[in-house]
View 1: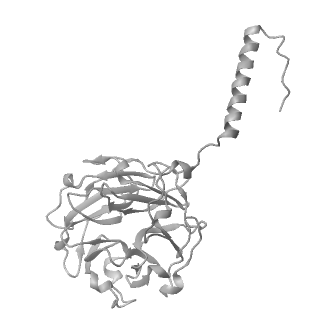
View 2: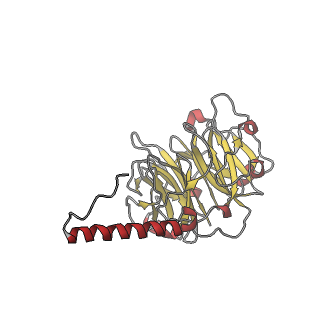
View 3: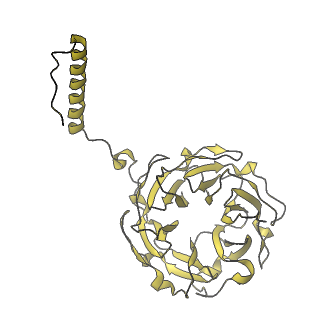
Length: 343
């Protein structure tokens, strides 16, 4: 650092100004030593009471862990989050879900085979930890990968969406303790590989959304036993999400750039039948997720670099029409890859 120059040759007003700046700088340095800048931990809300609900993060290569939900503090929407699953690129987080420690997980592979695994079999660890590979538990065939992960006890019907926009509906008992583990749910050569799934109680509508921000809504009961075309895809577009919806609960939509929106479902009218083209539900070129988000829910978002954030769904603006959304997570050379809603 250069030495302080002689100020005696300067005009009195200039010297006094410099001395005042030096005094202010010294005061600021003193404050910095006495009171360190707040960290993310101190800016976030305290954790909730202990719960058996687990936040489960799984990478594309099968590295997985579970962490009690109460260990994730709430932050404000638009924050940077904290590091979660310890993994390195090119392997990145691919699945994020909430399930009770006593529940099971249903894995559906790219060959549409269904597999069942206890949540308790996953390694439990702190928020930022490595976890272990689940692949030895799944016994995948060569070239087969996990396409969908969902809790086993989350509704009466599991609705499965394929890469060609086909939708199928399965009763919950098929995924219970007597599940035919490893059996194919359908022929992927006819309908394409699974890309997303959602549970429904039976009376809701289904909403299918595409990468380009288009969506269709129709009654779940309209899906026949052998499935049907859920949405007619435009060229270069692809299905990304399926959700059970009704007019009472908003739908959270998240794009890869970290922007999200709550869409009012009463303003998004249902079609009389599945299989039509979609209409714009959010303005984006890369939608990654859609899930129900009641006002009292918390939203969890995870990024490609394994940063995770938790914030209240009520902090996201509610819209009656298509918008670009608001910034939900601060991303720097990063991208959002998954989201989950938890009440």
